[in-house]
Image (cartoon, rainbow, N blue to C red):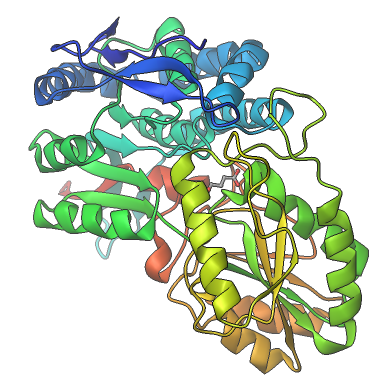
Length: 477
Ligand SMILES: O=CCCCC(=O)O
């Protein structure tokens, strides 16, 4: 059994005010392994009041002290990585080594923002008169409502919490109901590190109730959401109605362009890892594998050869390289997308079905021959499915890469500097990784364009999302 996940409100772990709870399941065994509290609107109001009380002090304490407390929290997270990883694997499914890597990366994220918060300098703008001083002050935006997903239950919470705290903002986080206990264990590190009461709160419950209430709440100034494009658009519309700033990290359908001059071994190693980690439930996972004709058959064979050797099993077993999908809804979605794909010319060269009949396991899958109007070619699969299609010339690959309304991540493999240069400007994406996988580091921007959202969850751009910019012009004469 996992620990039950309570709410963290005003510096205290406690049940929901009305005692409501909901079950949590292990996706590998389908057994109930714990429960999480289900917040009411009254619980949320208490958190907003606590955050409002905490804000002036957290802002005034200054970046150095904030950084010190955050670094202490990062240290606790790192010390507890193994213990928290086993909780994450039990409720999310990913292999325990992958879970532990995510937790260690999250400690790096906290530390990076702790440092970057100390460099939020603002700026001085040279004035037109010697008697006028013009400055831009960077100030914390205020109370943040964060909504973090179940696929990276800690890393995505870390990005929101760390950026908010570094900027001087309190944050009320709605954690993932499918994977609550690991998220609670992560938040506990902030509390134990001495982050003052009310600066961080954690909630679980009915997502629509929580988002409706927090987004409309006059005390909340900023929304940060990671999740599907469909839900992101609803939340952004609500936020727009209340003039709240947003960071929206939404869905993707990443193209991976493999040119005929590419190092195929590098492309294989990089793309197979990126496709099948976390059972493909990754917003930046490569999905449309666009491979130039001359190397198409060879690369397809190589990819199938690697994918078929991936050992699928309970993530708690160290021999498993890929765990189950995180819940039954994803298994149903995969089955329905594959069924539609097969009706639209698709051929499952590998996999294409669930593994076993207990647990939400789905086989590593490679599909060729899909018509452009197959759902798989248009909807984010969020599962271990690689869609292969050949292309003749670069223009054709670019057109296919840009065909969808998504623009989150893209990958390309080529030995030609000219081709790499051309793709850098031609691909409509928030992140492009050429000849390696270089995304998701704390210090680099992480976010999309078009229907994949706006704002960033990484790098300097992320911190700026939690700040306002006040122009002060001062005539001193
Ligand atoms: O699913 C989106 C977040 C990606 C996080 C990562 O790549 O580590």
